[in-house]
Image 1 (cartoon, rainbow, N blue to C red):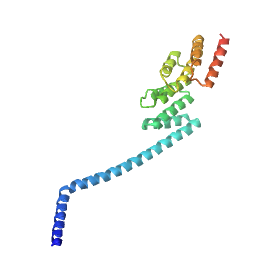
Image 2: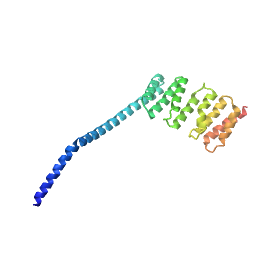
Image 3: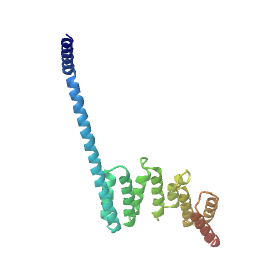
Image 4: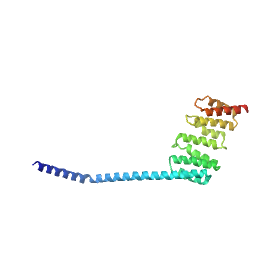
Amino acid sequence: MADIFDEVSEELKNDQLIKTWKKYSKFIIAFVILLIISLISYQAFKNLNEEKLEATSKVYFEAIENLEDKNYTKSKELFLKNAENYEGGYKMLSLFGLAESNFKDGKIDEMILNYKTIYDDDSIDIYYRNLSRILSVIKDNSGSYNEQMLLLKPIINSPSKLQILAAELEVILLIKFNKIKEAHKAINNLLKRSDISFEQKNRLELINKIYKNNE
């Protein structure tokens, strides 16, 4: 007797399962298909990104080789390609490479614009934006004192790993533009700081001594 009830109970369960399947099968199948598509799409996206990164890397190092070989036209073409078509680290590095290519090629105005693109881009880490300001000042031999100080002031006036270097560069600019008294004052202020390195201290003391004797 118990067996009969068991059989009836099993049939009811199967019947209920069939009804449930008929009712929800479309949703279940749709969910499974969506899951499969998602997995395939993720893998395809991952592979595409890897291929894209590999292609970007290849172009970047080819540009570096051309820069080292003094083929500036080709290096600029390749760096520009990366800078225009990609985002992230390789874009930033390519902009630095483009600026260096223009500098080596004597295209100072273009170099300045390349560095400006970097330090005006809020998506780039502040360290690299400040570095682009410093490099622009160091490599620009035609800009006025006010123009170059305008680039350095944001670094000098805010806490930064490059603050001391920017302050030292200010001293060089003051001497370059024959502002010797202001240079001495800037040097003395720097020498009072506890965070300057031994090498910087020696450099500043030497500069101070040389130009003090030549006043």
